[in-house]
Image 1 (tube, each protein chain N blue to C red):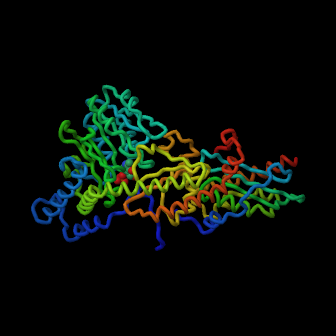
Image 2: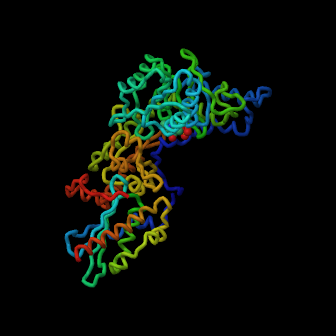
Image 3: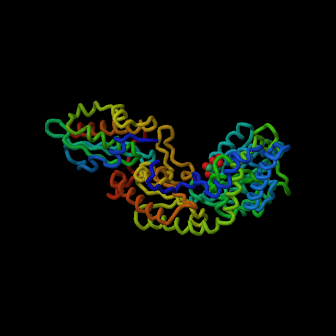
Length: 126
Length: 407
Ligand SMILES: Cc1ncc(COP(=O)(O)O)c(C=O)c1O
């Protein structure tokens, strides 16, 4: 299987790897997937007073496509409002990274992680 | 592929054809064009002579009679012929076959087909090291049992089953013994008659011969074993397998067998040192490393290892521009299932997803191993830096207690 340059770049030089303090009021955390399924994604957002995502971090256990999808998601999240974040569609990730059909579930996982992170933030700040 | 030096450690998938084998084959494409079944001109005679010579070379490797070698297109076909052929030939005697859950798909799927044809198949468990339980095997035998099929060495882990003991049990109960010996022939001594094996499948391309040619050993005397042909036509190979013989392929297979007979002990001794070096380096350099399969009963050139909290396919991507190996993880939407072999060993799905198989071969050098140790160790560390479950593990989180979201 040949991967796209963009995918390989996100895999080799992943952006925004790391951990935010999940107890922080301004941080929302999404943890999706399961070790038994071969992928676990943790995506975190830090939201400023205006409701804009000022930082995003991830860690992912999974194949190259899962890692690239989460790295790309963190890049896209930064600077977006939380409502814009919720509008990110997995198919946009598929297109950007040219994911092969068997790897589409990786993009779905990334979308789920974004939604969970935003929901976590919203619940904390409700 | 670029001309950068690549390290090939996937010899259980297929071996490079030995250049001496290629040399032996070349005349049989153009200079000796005959069909080995053409009995009335020198072209046919030369081809037949070459096939007979190769049959001798292979028979000598196995210490069997040359009339006991049936050429096929590979081990998949040999497995199919042995299992379905025995079932059809002996189904009046009984319809029950016993095999292992860790067999190759060529055996398991043939057995599935036999079940559809009215057969009954028992798939035995193995222990956590991949070994058969002999008491369970014996207990599974009933009066309808006609065949026991146990692979000699496992393709994923290299685990070697106790063939002598299984052969004794088969003899005691008067049951035929078949073995898929694809991963063992040409690498370790495989003399079926000493162990009571009646049918044995193997293939050229796992022993430095060309792809697309294999064989089935079928015992001729005490007992005389027969299989119903699965490929009908001109009645080649004593009526058991029709089809014009692949003369260049068979010549290469024969040459590969001769080289193996002379060199396999030295290859095995050298490769086991390199394999142990590779394995020990991972154990020493990295935490949470688990070797899969019984180290005391294992092929000398195989190492299957799980790097916990790292997904195998992702890990492979960190070094697959340089090193070719294979992974027990299949992370595709078509199959999220990790290796059924490792699952049968009782590994959790997570450890099975974290497994990598390194299989060395005749052309593996110490430099290959040193470079692989460095590249893979670096890859594991990179993937662990990225892994949320590694981080949780390091923080002391009980991963079994986490509510994961299955998908
Ligand atoms: C144990 C075992 N049996 C059967 C086969 C199939 O061999 P072939 O590729 O010659 O059909 C293989 C190779 O993948 C194998 O490892």
